[in-house]
Amino acid sequence: MRRGSFRKARIAAIAIVFASIVLTCAVGAGLAADGKKYEVVMANGRVMDPESGLDAVRNVGISGGKIRAISSNSLQGKTTMDAKGLVVAPGFIDLHEHGQQPRNYQFQAHDGVTTSLELEVGTADVAGWYTEREGKALINFGVSIGHIPVRMKVMHDPGGMLPTGDAAHRAATPEELAEIGVDMEKGFREGALAEEMGVNYTAAASHWEIVEMFRIAARYGASVHVHLRYAGLKEPTTGLAALEEVLAAAAVTGAPLHVAHITSMGLKFTPELISMAEGAQRHGLDVTTECYPYTAGSTELQSAVFDLGWQESQGITYKDLQWAETGERLTAETFEKYRRKGGVVVIHSIPEEAARTAVANPIVMIASDGMRITGSKVHPRGQGTFSRVLGHYVREERALDLMTALRKMTLMPAQRLEKRAPAFKEKGRIRVGADADITVFDPGRIIDKATYDEPLQYSEGIQFVLVNGVAVLKDGQLVEGVFPGRAARAPISE
Ligand SMILES: [Zn+2]
Image (cartoon, rainbow, N blue to C red; front, side):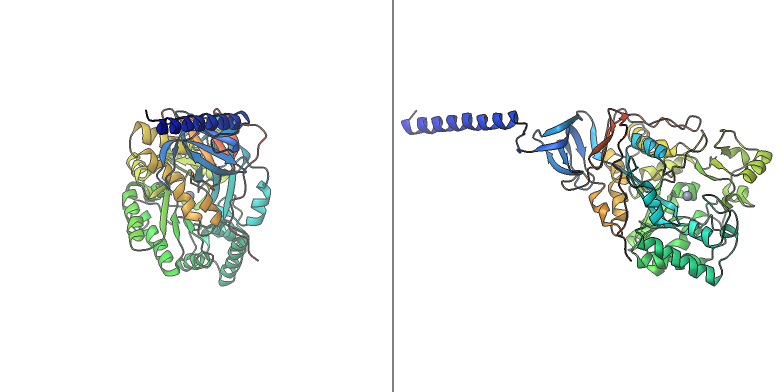
């Protein structure tokens, strides 16, 4: 060895020793290679981000409710959670959850949901709705301005969640229509995320009323989340005809359209409905849709859905209806009795093939349509939708791949809302700067446990859930006394 290179080697050796002393000191002082200490580190998980396509083992550093670092180097945290062998995904965003009570949020956290949104019935009082939940919510929450509740208010309907009187069965007068419009606009100014229409439940609303409501939504850049006018098997009351109505309304007004639970509207025509939505997208309309992974729907028995002719139209009968309070199947007698009393039924009407087609289709988002928990036999979808997609349809059935499934429950719902509510640009992604809403699960174990007979059971296999950087689920257990959920809301205007 020549003398010169010997000296270089010695300098290099000293430099290495010196560097490692610096590094050791830094680590000794509680700092990692990047010299920072995070509030939380999610360590060694398989990070899956549908936006960037990242699918690799990484450490995620979180501080101040945001993702601050995503690194293959180790990171130092005040709290470190071990995600080895687990998937680290953006928290699931549920566009359609009617149950917005603390108990629903606990079930949803166990199912990986970090943002729960009531967009399909919505509220008539957007400001009041948000105030009620501020500072008290386990997960993030948001609401739409609802055509159903506004119409019920303006027309003095005596119904509960859904109309049973004039709001269901009478056309609005010009004065009432004007009043409905004023209330809808107020909701938007108060920060409603979207507009809701449930045309099947407001069956007497004219086609023109529907167009008018779309026109208002268009002015506020809001998507219209629609429960279609029909869900029948026989023309002219099929989901196909009903979809045509709102596609036309979207086309003539420019308002984005979101079709709720395409499977319970389409039934055996679900593939045709999806292909209509795809065609509309290809031709430049902003149209999206969603489904839940079940072969039954659910709604209120006293609603207009069960007005005269429901059996013939929907191709089902009494025994296909299950009274949620007790789980019993209905007869002609109990149907009349319970319809007078009022309450929720589970409707066994969706072919498995329709459910599977929608769950697997890359343009169809996943949304639960969960219900407020009243009896012991509520539909299981509010408790198990997301785990059922990941456990049953991805792992067991191989109906779709994991990244596609995650995209349908994170990025796509965020993108649906981000034009109206820019806060959603920071959700549904594992990206530096994004909100630290994170769901960590075991892909080999995740599964829904809620069934029609035993619906109030937590899903399994979800280990950690972070909402704005705060753990609400740790080692599969709810964390007591934390309320990190924040209002997911569009900008408020005067
Ligand atoms: Zn619905």
